[in-house]
Length: 107
Image (cartoon, rainbow, N blue to C red; front, side, top):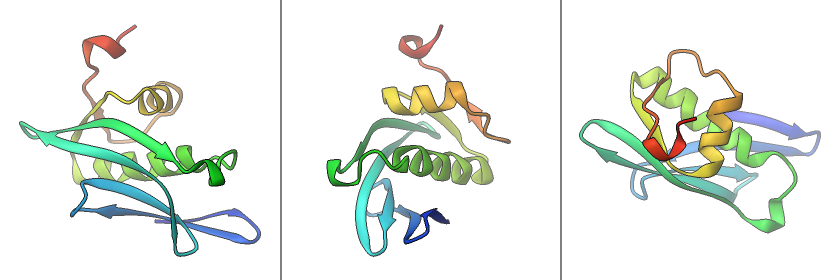
């Protein structure tokens, strides 16, 4: 998944199975990640982080959008625990994604 955030920045979102996370790269540098954990066939998203050096560019939203689109394409169910992922999913429709809201994120 490649995205162009500005005229000079090419961003890529990749799934890293070894670390159980999706990473966003600016050029070749990892600028942030969102972690996932598989539990009983669903994918929990407990934490998202963008390096402050890359802040203010919308990279967190690009990252989570890419991760959620990938899970939708895989037919997975996700459980948003990370406040950033919760906020993203409340504000954005992800076609084909099944979301199982934890009690702490309902309302």
